[in-house]
Length: 125
Image 1 (spheres, rainbow, N blue to C red):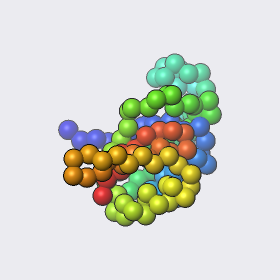
Image 2: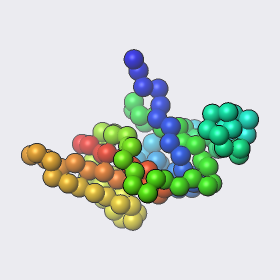
Image 3: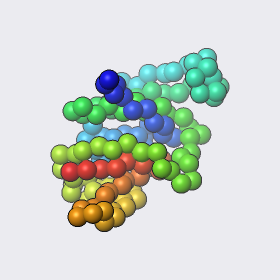
């Protein structure tokens, strides 16, 4: 089995770019449109979605831009990524005003960062 991509939602292309490019340093593909017929059939939402792919190394996020998207009040679903420059990602996230939670766990610390739409990411060195 192989994970192909992780699909998550964002409320705007600008917010997605700020997190996936500016914070994580991923590369962006040209956006495409997922039409209303498909969004209705797949998600039960009758609206066009903008689809953007962000990639880097073995990480591939498919972002579905839906202007009415709101993350759950208490998100627990998350993806976990290992980054090359952990301290830089944490520092950039804090400077950008993103929520960074670091909690002691065993002999280390577990780190979670919320993006601009409150999607949750576990970040590891």
